[in-house]
Length: 457
Image (cartoon, rainbow, N blue to C red; front, side):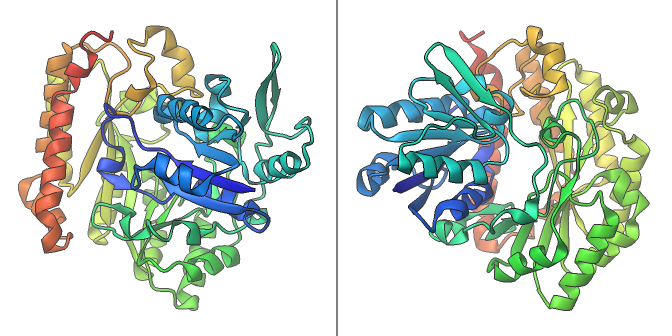
């Protein structure tokens, strides 16, 4: 059979996304590896290749599988409707994060099957049965509509990551030079773990593994790293550094292997403070950047989201990374309740940290999270196009226009100018004009985001 796997593009009103970074579609590469020996498989990355109809007509797939986060729900449902219009005989499958936490959003006649959870083995079995024209009864991790009933077979939350095949990166060869995060380009992604032992109530990732932290064996990671051609590597983990012994051993194995890469990974501030020696070891083998969810400038806000860290931890972690000359991807959250004084104090807090880079999202109650269950009746919009972490889904204390003006100013003024210059210098000189253009466009989208709500609420 011919199988077309699709990474969808963002909706027009969605802010951010592929406008500011593009990671490789690792989930689809895993899915492809599970079936490519028996089928003709193609990956279409619609963030980079917009001509879906041309690809569809030329490839003539028997099966189309699409992955989706919450922000892609409307886009993906529209794609499936097009597919069934073009060829009603094509078998359609949806998977990914949103399909796992809210499969009911895909119970549409244009979608034949929903996959929940880790999808490699489920998709393998689906393709086997589809080819033999057998029923799908009993496959773990699937959902579908049968007459007037909804059939839903729970997925296994704990999956041995080492049992999965290595992702097939050959199928994204034509796109690989375009995967990036800021100056890190071309950028490959690798998954070394899954899950998180913490219980942040704005996050659902810990629930997908029933609170377990699943890891891969170092030798399997080394093998995969040795096959990656890109100079930059992003660790696409839910949390990379929590198991310090594992990561120390991995650093040792990488050093012994002679692999030379420049790494970007996630790290909690409290982990960094507890294990600065771990960061030192990774710095020696190429760690260049750490994504740190600093989240807020007040402990009361950190307690509200059940982060499990403190402002003191955050400041200490920033100092440790700066002293080691490791770039900090600082991620912060804005509460819709913030007033002008909160924005001012947030700006002063960030400037005092003397960051080179800071990003701010609006507190977003995603389906599947404890936060969503707590506030879902208060949402001012249920349009999934707006679940992009920048459109507010909850009422703001400030008028929307003022709220987004303050957020715009926070983005523009939270990093001292001299530090911003240091950040910009990391880019190739020839790319700086386009980077500035893209940044200004994104900032203006944020400033004018209030207009997206006109006539919609």
